[in-house]
Length: 203
Image: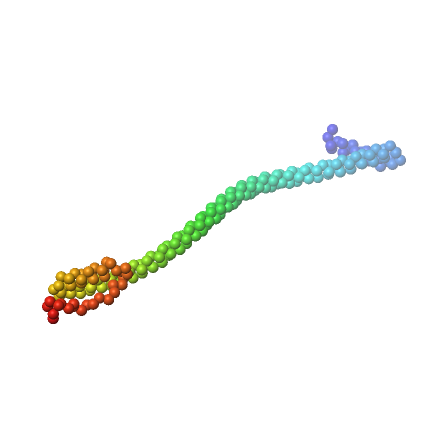
């Protein structure tokens, strides 16, 4: 039975109820039908709203699912970035430790170099003092050699001027004693540079 036929029969029933207002059964039947139709209309309205709300809810759920997927992707990216940052932090920490070790090594080397420099400075000071002593000894040796040369020249002159063998020997002995037998090698004493008196050939 189509809806149009049902509506036509209901309209006929409504007209009949108007003609017989005192018919309780007829009036109750019409009231029941109207109530059912109102309930049906409300149900259809609710059903339509449910469908609309359900569609909206599905759309929202789809959006939430999409957002959730996006958030999951972002969380994965952030987790990857966090892992990369942790790796970089570990690398930086390792480099920092290596730099600290190098700094300690350089500090030890610097201390060692300072110690070696102090030793070298001390050795240079000692060498300078030794050089000064050597120069002083050299000057004394030169002076002593010059003094010896003078004494030898004086002795040679005396020997040439002396005719006596004893006199010559005495001059040479005095020279040898002065040069080699004196306890104080640095002090040669005072020599008489005057020519000795020759008794055989007085001058």
